[in-house]
Length: 65
Image 1 (tube, rainbow, N blue to C red):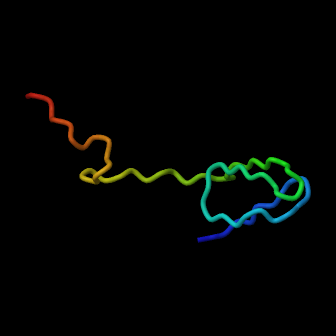
Image 2: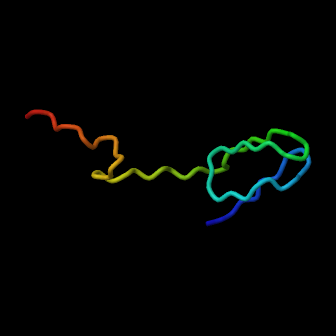
Image 3: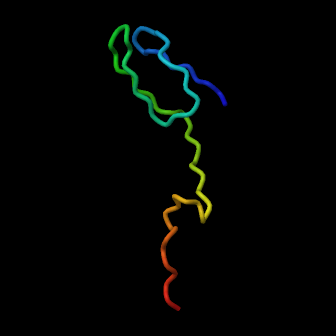
Protein backbone atom coordinates (compact mmCIF):
# COMPACT_ATOMS: atom_id res chain seq x y z
CA UNK A 1 0.00 0.00 0.00
CA UNK A 2 1.56 3.26 -1.16
CA UNK A 3 0.48 6.52 0.48
CA UNK A 4 0.22 9.56 -1.76
CA UNK A 5 0.53 13.00 -0.22
CA UNK A 6 -2.13 15.49 -1.35
CA UNK A 7 -1.14 19.17 -1.11
CA UNK A 8 -3.05 22.37 -1.83
CA UNK A 9 -2.29 23.61 -5.33
CA UNK A 10 -2.44 27.24 -4.18
CA UNK A 11 -0.59 27.41 -0.82
CA UNK A 12 1.12 23.96 -0.78
CA UNK A 13 -0.29 22.98 2.62
CA UNK A 14 -0.41 19.22 3.21
CA UNK A 15 -4.06 18.18 3.12
CA UNK A 16 -4.08 14.38 3.27
CA UNK A 17 -2.32 11.08 2.80
CA UNK A 18 -4.38 8.71 0.67
CA UNK A 19 -3.73 5.19 -0.50
CA UNK A 20 -6.37 4.57 -3.16
CA UNK A 21 -8.69 7.00 -4.89
CA UNK A 22 -10.21 7.77 -8.26
CA UNK A 23 -11.28 11.35 -7.55
CA UNK A 24 -10.70 13.45 -4.45
CA UNK A 25 -11.98 16.92 -3.57
CA UNK A 26 -10.61 18.73 -0.50
CA UNK A 27 -11.09 22.33 0.62
CA UNK A 28 -7.92 23.79 2.08
CA UNK A 29 -8.49 25.08 5.63
CA UNK A 30 -5.74 27.69 5.22
CA UNK A 31 -6.58 29.45 1.93
CA UNK A 32 -10.08 28.00 1.24
CA UNK A 33 -9.07 26.81 -2.24
CA UNK A 34 -11.09 23.82 -3.49
CA UNK A 35 -8.60 21.18 -4.62
CA UNK A 36 -9.79 18.52 -7.05
CA UNK A 37 -7.56 15.70 -8.15
CA UNK A 38 -8.05 12.55 -10.21
CA UNK A 39 -5.89 9.48 -9.89
CA UNK A 40 -3.16 9.33 -12.52
CA UNK A 41 -3.79 5.64 -13.10
CA UNK A 42 -6.86 3.70 -12.09
CA UNK A 43 -6.82 0.02 -11.36
CA UNK A 44 -9.51 -1.96 -13.17
CA UNK A 45 -12.12 -3.12 -10.72
CA UNK A 46 -12.05 -6.83 -10.14
CA UNK A 47 -15.16 -8.72 -11.12
CA UNK A 48 -16.90 -10.40 -8.21
CA UNK A 49 -17.13 -14.16 -8.47
CA UNK A 50 -20.57 -15.70 -8.95
CA UNK A 51 -22.18 -16.62 -5.66
CA UNK A 52 -20.93 -13.49 -3.92
CA UNK A 53 -23.86 -12.01 -1.91
CA UNK A 54 -23.92 -8.69 -3.82
CA UNK A 55 -23.33 -10.03 -7.32
CA UNK A 56 -25.66 -8.45 -9.88
CA UNK A 57 -26.70 -11.79 -11.43
CA UNK A 58 -27.52 -13.60 -8.18
CA UNK A 59 -31.18 -14.41 -7.72
CA UNK A 60 -31.94 -14.56 -11.46
CA UNK A 61 -33.55 -17.63 -12.89
CA UNK A 62 -32.06 -19.47 -15.82
CA UNK A 63 -34.04 -19.11 -19.06
CA UNK A 64 -36.33 -22.02 -19.97
CA UNK A 65 -34.78 -24.47 -22.44
